[in-house]
Structures are given as structure tokens and as C-alpha cells.
Amino acid sequence: MHIDDIKGVCFDLGNTLIEFGPHQIKHVYKALEDGLIELFGSCDTEKLKSIRDRQIIAPYSNGFKENNLTELCEELIRELYDVVPLPDQVDKLFKIRYESFVDVIEIEPDVLSLLNRLKERYRISLLSNYPCGRSIRDGLAKIGLADMFEAVVVSADVGYVKPHALPFETLLNKFGESAENCVYIGDNWLADVQGAKRAGMASIYISQHLPYEKFEPEDGDFEPDVRIEHLSELENILL
Ligand SMILES: [Mg+2]
Image 1 (cartoon, rainbow, N blue to C red):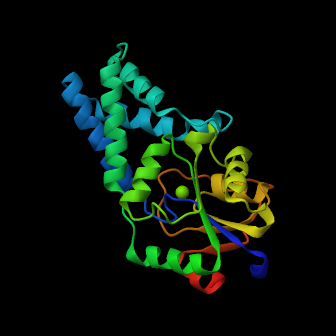
Image 2 (cartoon, rainbow, N blue to C red):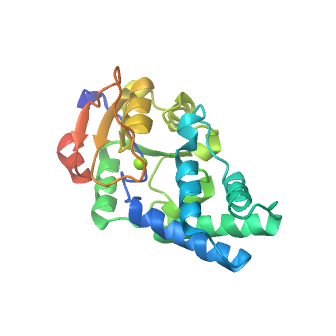
């Protein structure tokens, strides 16, 4: 990675700019559980967790096709209660997923100031894997990032998750930068490091937060250009 060639700095969101680990996932699961109890009178917590855990990693064994949040809610009701879900029930779960996500995410003041300083020197953008684009956009607005990025792409809008090429191509098109002039910063070895390198971007791999789902390196994988343990290290690398 030649720093003088870098014009665009592209970020992952969860566990890169904000923490989205076991604590946040637990908050969303609890909100779902409470909502399901309200709708159906009871909820098998263990079964809920196992279905959700399976749904989270499903795109990675399904040709990287992104989940549809409405279908995820339908599947959850069908498998938990062995009933055909009613539209109102699906809508309610959808709303709970959306609200609990926006509610639980937070950003450190240091991250905001780092992004503002990076913006003085680079163009910045965001590419996130998430099955609901509205959740990410409203979540960004909640934490003060509504106007931070020149381009925001969410896997749900594209239909495929990173490391698939399409989310990266969509981001670069929207961003108007070529891959070789961009560095991608993310915490997920498969989605972020392999995805960015295959797309022709430089890669910075961050291990600051504990991710809920983890992918181990495999033979023949790309190495990241740089490894960091804390986002603040970007100060020395990029500024
Ligand atoms: Mg991430």
C-alpha cells in the first residue's frame, strides 16, 4: 500500500467504526424475545438464539446472497411456533429488529473526530453487510454520521454480502474512485480483507472489537496490507 496513491478511505461499520459484538447482539435478541412473548405468549430462548445464529451466517454458505429482513422474520415465526406468519406479526418483528439495532449502536467521540480529520485529506465512504439498508442509514443518522460519507452502500441494497464482488463494485461506482486508489478498513477476515483485496483495494484489518461471527484464514488467502488493534492507529498510518 502506497500512502501517496490513496485517495479514498472506505470503512466497514460493525466492529470497525462501532462496536457490534455479543453485547449488542444480545440486546437485539432480547428485544425480539420480548416481542415474540407479546405476540405468542411464550418464546423458546435457546431456539430463538440458534435460529438467529444460523441466519446471521447463512449468506456466507449461500453464494453470499444477502438475507431479506422480512423473510428472516417470517422464517423465525414459522420455525419457533410452527404456524404460517401473519403480515402483522412479521411487521412487528421487523420493527423490533429495526428499532433495537438503531437503539443499541453508539459511536465513540474519538471516532467522530478521527473521521472528520481523515475527511480533510481523503474522500471517505462506507460499505456494510446488513439485511436492512434503512436500519444502517437511520443508525448512521442517530450516531451523527448522516452526512459523513460520500457514498454509503449496504449489502441489502445490492443483494449480496461482502466478500462478493458486487458490493465492492457498487461502492466504487458510487464513490467514483478506482480500487487501486482506495483502502478498505474492516474487522472480518473473509468479508472485509478477502473482499477488498479481491476487488483490488488495499486492506487494513482491525481487531479492536470482539465480533459475534468469526472467519478463520484459509490457505491461499490474501494478507491485509496493514493490521491494527485500535482505530486510533489510523492516525499514524493515514494522517
Ligand atoms: Mg464488521
